[in-house]
Length: 561
Image (cartoon, rainbow, N blue to C red; front, side, top):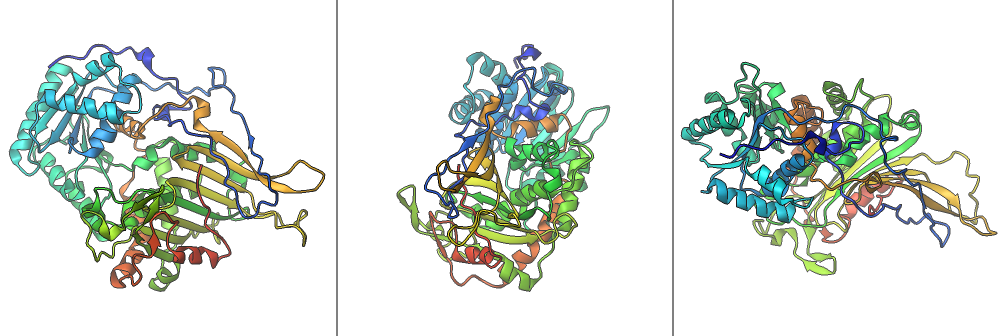
């Protein structure tokens, strides 16, 4: 094994407000407020608020991020897409930013036969294809010298006996300090088998100051009861402090900035409540189908795959109460309290406040695409939903009476993840009248992907002798801060190495999110859909979703950059 050369700590990237800056965002076109039916002028001028050039003088400095301590990252399922597309590019980015320790190694574990050299070659190719920054040959050589591989059968005891010997070898030759991070990039049905075997072999036992941590991918269970049972089995081996339940959405810079935006700017907190906010919309739309995940999606569906985790976590960040700090348990506590306050639907409520859909054939980007039932790995009579929309209520003093509309779907018109905060309209329509359309409300748009930024939509007078108004977008884009591309996993991996669980889920958070969607799952399981497929690929979903929000006098915002 080749020992790694010393890393110059001065190679760390300049940060903006804390260690999370390692997950810099991708540059994207400046997001602009979309045109709407309420525009009462032919023109729609935009006003950009220019962000000052980032310098050492105007960055609020905290403690600069330091390299993590010595450790080995063990990736179970290392030959899968997640490892190739996200995990290895993220680890390389951490290396490039000087945030990996000298005593460090990555051990890929999978069923297929490979040598260390062939695995390094495979990961190098994946990095060139999926990496977010240009691969520097010298940097890659230093990184790849610390990459290793072990063929394994996850159910065989010899796998963990050999793993234990390999890790001890790394500790001795590479100085990894007996600290191990296990990443379970494997199907959920083997989570329990692997953690149980790790426990029986002593590989998760912490002693003499050595730490052992496990990152678990979503979904954590397939419903409330299975999540309780999975946690029971895993907690027999791991403590809650050792278990890091990951949601990659929380690694996105724009999502993390929700906390800074809300609690770092004094102008928003006074109006962030039912007195000023009319309603909230959260959209996670994908233009792609199920790709090669047909068999997985048949067992999941949109409600389990996206709504129960990503979308409810976004809801908790938007609506949670201010934490006492932005570190550790304080943030996680408030997220859980918010989910506890979500009103649980009765079966009759589900019929009115939940909509499911499945895409049929259609046109996306001027190309004909098949319906869900025609995808590989999907039953031709499948009743699995590829679209889900919910109307939720939060029963606390801040949000009583404010509806939260959430929707997610495959094969939608546009790929976009966006949060819309719609404020109440002015009580006196000074600019209204029989000859003029209503002015309309102000809106705050938080663009998460593919654009990453924030737009505050206000009204302004169109130049000219006649009084006409138009929506104007006051825009901020993360590229204005000199952002560099990332996968979104960098911060999460680094935080786990540093034992910072702020962006990971506690078990009570996970169980409360299942509690919210469980009544919907139960009703949908008991009442098969009668109209599938009920929306064309390339549309914005089924008509029933429009009707659900229109009953309250609202319309879905059409997201876009």
